[in-house]
Length: 114
Image (cartoon, rainbow, N blue to C red):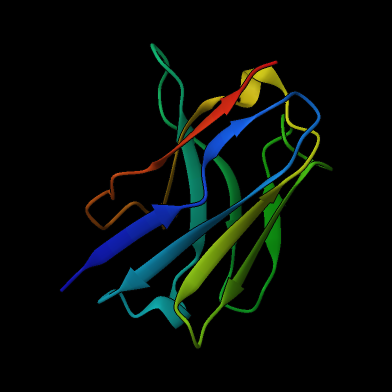
């Protein structure tokens, strides 16, 4: 059964940090280029970070130097460490493979506010 389950979101002050997790099942995780996406109210979903099966990473300019994506192929889990959070980072965060082949999970809400 294909499943993507995101967790780790919450309310954080500007400048704070959060670590998101996404547990995958049924997608042959180890061969997938995995990504973290986010969608803010009234905006399109955007890809913010991606990681290949071998661990090569790439980031959107808006998060470069602040976010770090990683993965554990044995646990079939992808992570997003978010540092120096800004109000504009507030969104629902989702994971999927970069080709977006799989049903979206419920996402995890990130709120950045003082």
